[in-house]
Length: 258
Figure 1: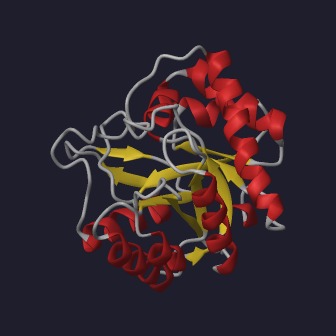
Figure 2: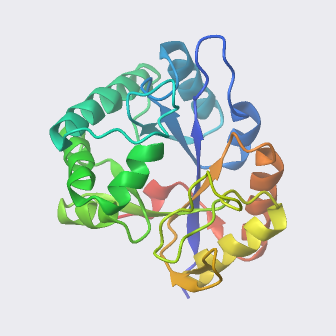
């Protein structure tokens, strides 16, 4: 019997200047992959370098987390950029984090788009391809982290990239497999027990209940938890423990994504 494996990822390095965001130092002890902001939606050079160092010290793999150039809106507002603009913006941001990783003697593992860009590229094939092309042009060994069943997943596969199918531990799903808008009630799930039950079902059965109660099918290679959730530490610690209790091995995605 093949042993089930899953990666746990978290968005990190989203502090900026004197502003502190997230519980990076606490959460990083329980994850296997860190998605580090690249300065466009959040983060700055000092924070990027510090977060790479923090990941290295905790044996956590590092990935770029590029987003729209929107510090004020934290990358959660839709920007209508031409796919070519998106491609060059992705190259710029991935390259910046790659330099910090190399300066610390490590290589990037993956790329995961942030916020509104990620949501838009989940259904917009042109945007999904623009992100994928940027990844391939920078380093075709990088893993394209794509929302399960999304246009990004399809684009990554068509480009011949390694693709990790991502599910969200603490976010509610619409019946079409997209995420419920944070502006709507129930979009963020805060109860650790509820989150854990959902994730175990996603990993073991490939299914999750949408916000209207309908069951949808998805593939879970990597599970995203959010470090800016006030219950983040309790949530990710409990999730990791319960996954392991259920015989699911927690490993960085590079160990099993081919």
